[in-house]
Image (tube, rainbow, N blue to C red; front, side, top):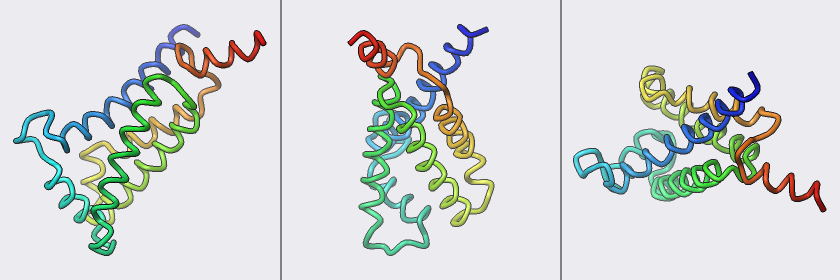
Length: 144
């Protein structure tokens, strides 16, 4: 049973990272121009954050994108996984609450933002992260 749990945690790390990277890829047109681009994302950021001053919308768009890239890379390699997963859970919670406020509950549900949030939160509660840089560093510390 334990090996399946280790595999599930690895897949959870990868799936969470890929969700972030896929969203970022859309913003940069990597899934095709018809799927989206940076300008459309900044406009969408303004709609999601309808309560925020217009002047900070570009900052929010850049910050969200930078965090998603950072979280995705760190989750893929498994470095500081607990902290990164908690950060990912907080970021997606902010997304979900903002989407719910601005568009209603169905929007966050349709994009499975609540699932992303709870997946990241679950990942943050794991006791260890097999097949990760965290595991490698823990073994190194034990040997020293």
